[in-house]
Length: 417
Image 1 (cartoon, rainbow, N blue to C red):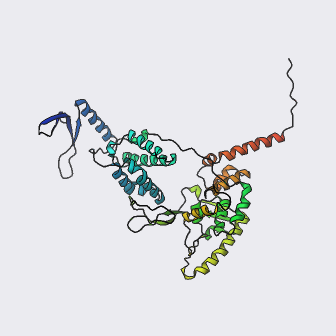
Image 2: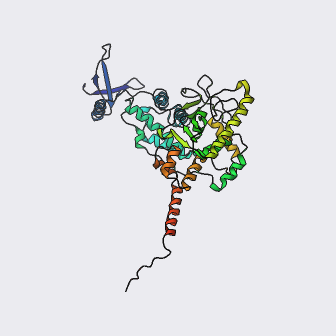
Image 3: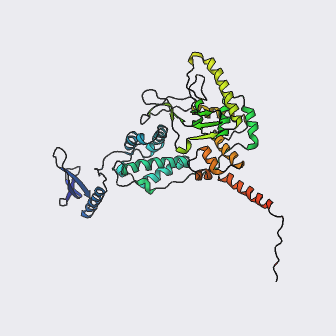
């Protein structure tokens, strides 16, 4: 390291003005033999020495220390989406990352240089999001994306000494009890929508507990008629349609997206992939009533196929559109919103049918572990957390059942004074 020298700069009048102190250390020469140095600037010798010591500690950890570049948070996040995230997450997850970054993070933090980003900037950003009436879940998701991106800058890209996001905490969203269809309303609901073209889909969602994407990807080869089983082997993911230039089409029943996409997605439309965990790949036993509904769906599909004629595309899906292509998950959700009011359950979302299936199993006395396996949960602990309220009710019933088996009164010996 060279000796400390004055750090000077000319002012507007051309006079030399002392700013502070500076020093340089020699780095390995470039491949073409050119000399390479790294300069440090500070207010005094102590400040410059502190920077040099920190530089050497980072070198020992294998972190590549670059000069303070002008790369902003916006530029880095776009590069991270394109070069890092796109290689490690599924397309549907990349799409959700891109939307949160484009809509929330870049407008709030995009102009700040990555090298200057501090925990205080993140705290101010999250506070502003709360004031803008964003949900706790949205803020938590934005924080998770920022933390992942900055951690990759530290651990994978070796471009930052530490992640400011690791020093910030956000409010955790309160988990609400899932809204389900009361058991006494199931028969009435089914009688109200039995003539709907997606009635078999909704019926199977309750009976099997499958997710929306799992039923959209269900094929006739996955049904074992003799053993009365359903095999979950794939799931449907829906990406925005692409216009060829990386911009999403304006989809029906959705607000126009006026801003261009930050990065191009690896595909568009429907994507069929393996479920997110090994537990999600499962075989589900079905009751005889479900098999009758599936036979009815076969007959209904035969009528639709004959009507479509030469335009029919044979893909072997159980649930299709009018031309034989697989159903879009958004189409199913939008249709459920239209008919749930008629069914008398306006507050229950489509995913609530899956919650209803879990509640029915627990109230029928099915062991929680068996119910969790049937639903494809990654762990029984997650299942217990989701349906703790139902389990608490069953605890009360168990206590009452034990009390009924015991004698009405126990003759305890009285205490003698």
